[in-house]
Length: 396
Image (cartoon, rainbow, N blue to C red; front, side, top):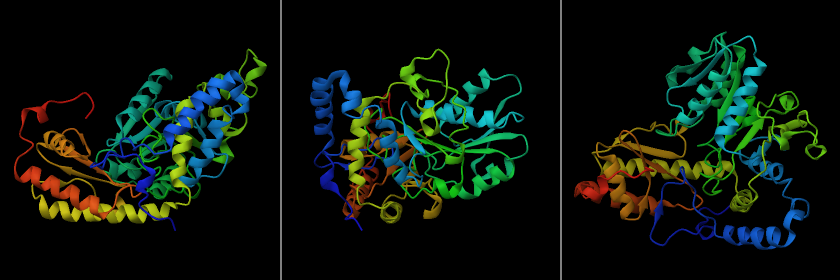
């Protein structure tokens, strides 16, 4: 068992209680030195030789294997690169290709908008008859029928933290003949995920949240191993080719998960992520989940007792919730800005949701109680009711 939290591994500003790792994870303390090494010793001294001498070309698969351990995937089934939007497009396109006689993409109305935008864009590129169909989150299973080609869901809702039952929905989708795609943006690094056990065909996710890869950190894609040599990559990029340095004019997909690579990997950013993953050494996801549930339960109990103006938006049952807690408050945006000004950093989602993420690697019970005390003081004294806290920023 690892010791939690591991605050000494993170470079958090003094006096800050960081409850926004569900949006952008904090900086692991050793990452800047590793990035400097990549810049000075690898790029600076090795120049183009570093693709071979420093393992840059193998990095997407190498880092993918480290992420795979945290999401219950076997080695060789995850590869890194590009953005989450690109990986959603790849997975969705491959899924539709596997069910050419069907025309419906099913998602839910609580899904992150980007996933839906990518689905809309893909539908517009396909021939007539394709559609994106949305169900209420609780009605997804009932909406899966013989017309559905792919079910695309985010396991943990970005706004409320509500959690889908991955195993049950995957079984329902496959029983109806559909392909299952999971977005793990709010799951990877926050809770136990069992991709292999779920038997889903595809999964995607980002690494700048709970995995602390930094802003713009590369995304990942998982393909079930028995499908890896069959999945058709819609984005037939150079580095997804079987022999990129043969410079053939025609595209031949690489074997296995490598075919899901597209363009040149962002070496500097991926090196930051690779180093950041060191904080997970010796940590089991079951331990993270148990500690996360305890922190969330404590926050809910103390916030409801001290802040009666707040309304719980997240599911009350821990099993139906990810690693975040969301409360609704009429003046939620202003209250969150006042809270941030006092050193407690969460974030806001329209129209009135205050979000708080809990990562046991750098948070403890004392942080939770201190955060609630500051929040209660702000609400009791209407400290949020100031013009500077009502001025909306571009990023909320």
